[in-house]
Image 1 (cartoon, rainbow, N blue to C red):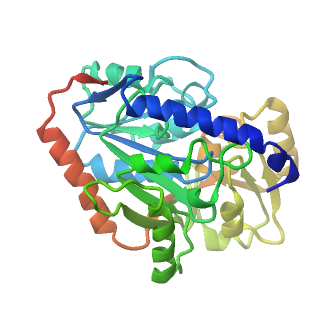
Image 2 (cartoon, rainbow, N blue to C red):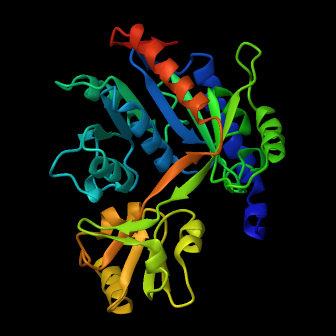
Image 3 (tube, rainbow, N blue to C red):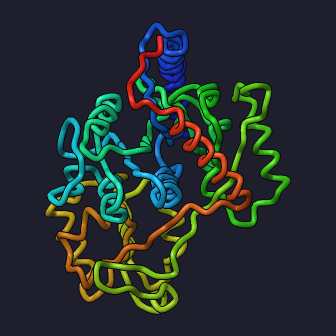
Length: 355
């Protein structure tokens, strides 16, 4: 923790008080929240950035879309648009935001929508001619206006919420006790060789901040990032093993790019780093092109959707990632499918106020 963050400690206490008061008002029904009689799964975190929400949302899409009509609803962070938008053939990363646009391109069989007001976004989706049967709320753990049917809390292995502190001293958006809303917790970005003993030690630490339901321990799962063995663009793919023999440029504008670089980087490569969700300007593009003359450019999927129209397609590639459970994947899938099945059986497709 740097000196400036330590000096801002009083503001962290104030911020923690404000967010705790807000949660208290929702918990007591003083502030209204709304629930919907279709399965709504909220995926989010207590801290800012870098916990792996995007690959986790994609995991749910792969799990659920073969049997259900699925929609994702995001706020569309840093998009150049406002209000509710349902993705269609005219959509771009600038209109939707990079993550929703990535979902739209990869999964054409689902609906992808953005709206900062999640209640309005859900209502708009349910008013569509072909309305979804399941809605996945992306980065909505703190969006208390909607009461989701199932909450999944993500926390990164190297930045566990139980070891963190409130903004601006730490990276927490709300108190650690916000974990009590989670139906289950996923520790993301774990090393593949994490031991069962370490998993149990982490589980004990995290459960201290979770108020158990029916005296049962909250389920905690452990996942890692699984990188593809190929990089892709719209026309061809290249093996990572061959790519490592080639001088290239690696480019990332995500919250925590180190694992991406570690997977691909060799001594011969150039590296360019931008801020998370960076909007690439004409000057940025000219700089990238000048440094990448006659070189392949490899970037993340989120950056690819913002760059593909600005850089020659034969030059630009992306590296796909997936969320991979280290164990108990079948148990996790069963929990989600059971929730969805039960919720659908009870569905009457209306909105209820929780007071």
